[in-house]
Amino acid sequence: MGSYLNNHLIKDEKIVHESKFHWVIFLSLRGIFTLFIVPLIERRLSEFAVTNRRIVIKTGFIARRTVEMNLSKIESVNVDQSVMGRILGYGTLTIIGTGGTREIFNNISRPLEFRKAFQEMC
Image (tube, rainbow, N blue to C red):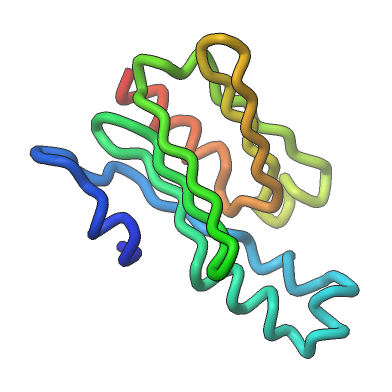
């Protein structure tokens, strides 16, 4: 469990599922040019979780981006996977909230398990 999640859980909230960036993020020009340091930092510091009350996503270190949506305010969690994504177990999560709010996260490890955990909580 990540430190952001530990510090921001509310009363009686429990983590149901956690995920992180897939190792495929190392296979990019950015990874090669930075000697794999930037993808390593991204993977270690990003947190994706479904709790019994909300979805919590935190990315970044210096420029932090957080998304916290109550389960009741989420219309759907969509998963897009390429053929290679299906073979290696990664994909893109698109979280659509009420009012048309759309949050997209690429290269997430085990995205179908993330969506299943969300669906089981609703």
